[in-house]
Length: 126
Image 1: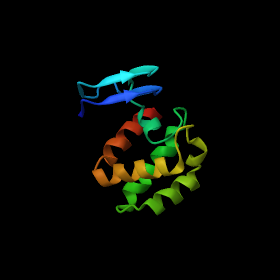
Image 2: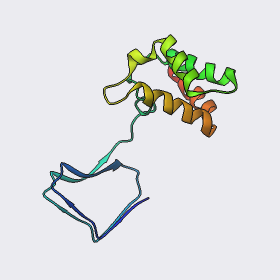
Image 3: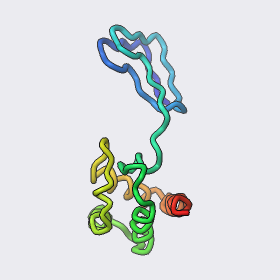
Image 4: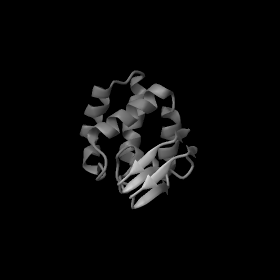
């Protein structure tokens, strides 16, 4: 939940940019000289959230995720080495970076959502 009380947002391109489903509470907040006060955007795709282009071959990402699962214990260095070996760094999108991919995959591992990600990417493979 984003809560802003009595804030003044002045002379910017976009005052607040958030996903369409974000919970936002603006109380006494004003926008002056902004091209756009509020930009409610679609949340990024799963692949874009990892910093990857939408047309990345999903089997490459699936190989990385399965490698993380098989290892039973994953480090950012191990994820980086495997992603590099698989050629995933060639599929980084314009707003992403190698560290976006590594940190995103590591977060999936740490949070317990790795299996969910494997299931989702498996479906992308067809």
